[in-house]
Amino acid sequence: MIHAAIFDMDGLLFDTERLCCQAWTDVSRKAGYVMDESLFRRCVGRNNRDTKALVMQHMGPDFPYERFNDEARLWMRSAMEEKGPPEKDGIREIFSLCDAAGIPIALATSTSESSARWMIQKAGLTDRFTAWAFGSEVEQGKPAPDIFLLAMNRLGVTQPETCVVFEDSSAGICAAHSAGMRVVFIPDMINPASQERSYIWKEYASLLEAAADPALLQ
Image (tube, rainbow, N blue to C red; front, side, top):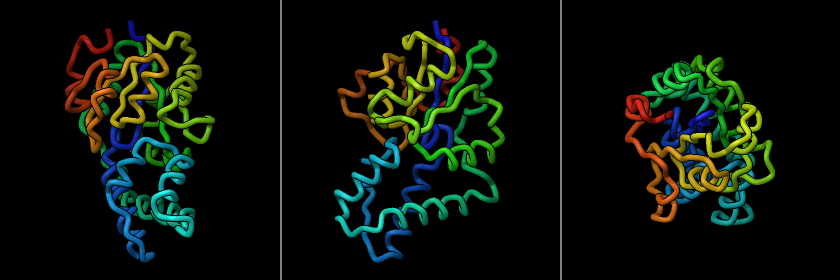
């Protein structure tokens, strides 16, 4: 029996992973650096602390990460200012399915709190969430389970096996599995390895397809 639903944000609710990848490419190029897409893919699903460590390891100790990160965020916010974040198909349908089943929803994202709340508010989805958990609030980011356990606690749920986590990243899949939760995988930019695939409870092509499955939340 499902008692709670926990959602990642970037790449799952919003088609922002590709937008962020373009921001990284443009901002780094203007600063005279070459940042390939493979580095971005390694960082998908990870919090800012872990992302910084991976970027600095790859780009070298002189890379101006803080300035780069700030400029990339401004690039993305500017791109979303007029129309809001690009929604993935089915996010409103999957939320309605949860509401109809009486299942509370939490957001658990590695994105900074200010950026995440801005995107959710811009999309008009703030009132859909009962609880929020952000990467900056936990000691260890994904693939550690901390953020999902925090979200579960804030929902007032005590049994992780009754929580279903919707994820699009390998780090998120591993984090949800480590938390003892059921993983619903919605593909975006990442193709999980075989070991990570073994952690997946259900997989759908989109949230819209997931919302059409009457057995999903049973």
